[in-house]
Amino acid sequence: MATTKDVISVQQNWKVVSHDLTAFGVEIFSKLFEQNDSYADLFEGIKVNGDFDVSNPKMREHGLRIMSTLGSWIHTLSDLPSSAVSCSSRAKSTKRGRSERRNSRPSNRFLFHALESRVGPKEFNLQAWSNVWRWIIDGLAQGWK
Image (cartoon, rainbow, N blue to C red):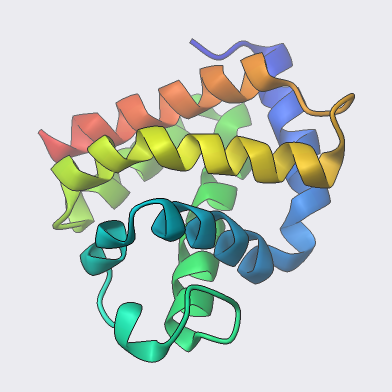
């Protein structure tokens, strides 16, 4: 379970990256799709609109949508009941529950690497992010049931 200290650390890191969620999201998903381009098949239109980079409008749209959603959960972490409802609602609204849970493992590695490179290794708290990420994925899993 994420502690109050974890939440504060994650929220502080998020403030640093939240000014350009589109580029941040594209960076993460570019790495994920380059590692295994079959993941891109889970998202309509990404492959047919070009390379896995910022020039692809579907990559920009996907990166912004996912990072904005993640940002809203991070913003509400101080109110855990609201955050839990938000995670569960998001999971219920998606058709990709099982694949998203399976794909969360490699994506968190790319998320954490991108965060560390943007906020700096001293400010990035891997344990806090791991705890919060686990809490988010568990909340999503509840909605997928």
